Structure formats: structure tokens, C-alpha cells
Length: 221
Image (cartoon, rainbow, N blue to C red; front, side, top):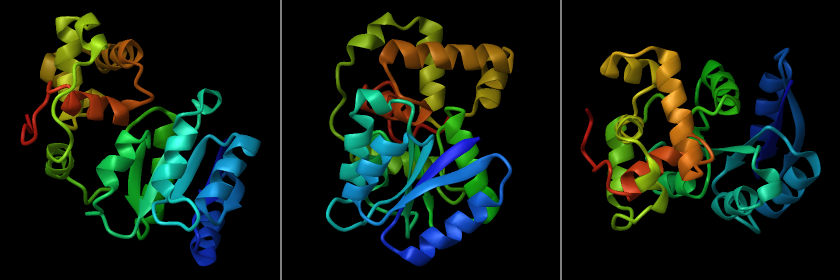
């Protein structure tokens, strides 16, 4: 059973999400929070698998709340999905850099929301359907100059190649086709790369790929 915490200052939004999620046989809503401070407290209390976190909330915004959650070593299994009203939200890339596993627009289709919850539990990065790879590159282009990641030198040539492909938004299946290997082999390379770099999940690996300079904005493969 996948447990979810709903963090949004609008009670109607929380009620709508709860009705959808609780109707699923493999998902349950463990709790709710109306502001960022409460969200952090509830996460520490309930240890949910996934937090659906609104970016804009009183007392403590979603970005700050996410940083507190992802920065707590005892909560490293908790995945945060940011919720935003606009898919071109200026805070989207910062949210992923802060440790969020991805984001969704609030008016996303119900099926997409359910897929999102299940996907992040499996360690997949998450982007709303309307957000293209060019948008990832656009936000990445606004990030700081390339950083010298110590772990980058520990990657094999194939792992660096795989990391670059993850960075331009390719799935494991697409990477497998590009490199002419099995999807399982591609997944193994991605997993090993994440471990070596200390990435929480695939979304953070995308950030590392851009910030290390391994991938540059506009590279769509």
C-alpha cells in the first residue's frame, strides 16, 4: 500500500485528491497539511511514501518544506511531488534541485496523478505531460555555472553516457534502444550512476547532469 500526504492550503484541492487516491486499492491518504510547517511535522510523524506538495503555502512555502524533508536523512525514502497551478512555473527547476522527485500541474488528468504517485515510488522522475524536454533545458539554462562533482570522476564512460541520456529526458527503454542494450541493463546503469553520485532519484540525476556540464541546455538528443 502506497501512503500519501496531501499538503495544500486549499481544502477543496485536498478533498478532491483524497477522494481520487483513497478510491485506489493500492493507495491510501495518510494525512493532510494546510501549510509547509505542518507538512514537515506530518511527514516526520507519518513517514509517507509520497508527499503531494503545493509550491505556494503560508508559514513555510513548498520549496522550503521540501528542502527540510529531503535534507533529513531519516526521511530519505519519502518522495516529494510538487503541485503548481502553471506548468511554466518559475520555481519548477528549483523544486527539483531542492530534492523534489518531479512536479504536476493541479489540473492534471486523474489518471496522470495516479501514475505519478506510483512512478515516484518506483524511483522515476516525473514531469507533467505538457512539460517538454525543452522546458527542462530552459530551466537548466538558468541554473548556476557547471559544478565540479567529485563523484563524476568515479563514473565509467558508459555511466557518463547513460547519465547524459537521462539528462535529456530519455526513459530506460529509450536509453536501451539508443545504446542497443536491454532495458534491464539500461536500468542497472542508471541505478549505479545514482548510487555513485548520491542522487535521491532520477529527477536529481537530471539536475546533476546539467549542473556538472555533462549536458548542456538545448541538447535534445
